[in-house]
View 1 (cartoon, helix red, strand yellow):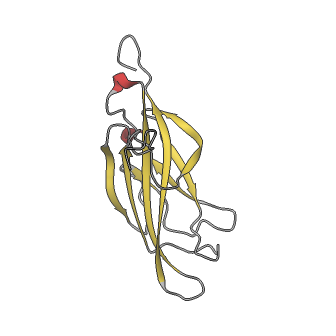
View 2 (view 1 turned 90 degrees about the vertical axis):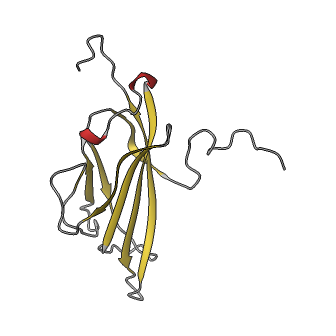
Length: 152
């Protein structure tokens, strides 16, 4: 069988299912906020025991931030800002903030690039108590904002 034209991987798109942001386009240099609820296989909220993240420019195959292992007590500095781990259930999602400093264009002259936040977390199943691992990809378009002066 020959090469399939229109393959998403050849166009820089993800191969696996992914979720899109409520606002899937954002300006470079602007913080991005991701509300997250951690659910097990029965859709019961669970507190993660570990979380790893990596922010990539998938248009140009470049790492933008990470990979990073998040600490369960939270962080208020760096590329990823977040509170202590919670399930995000009961109407109060856990929020991961991607700092504007990490939201930079790889090649500003391109105008925009497709970015991916890969999110891998481990939790314990609410029924069996056994650990399990989940993977999520968050896809968004990062848009450059060129100016004549180049300073803003």
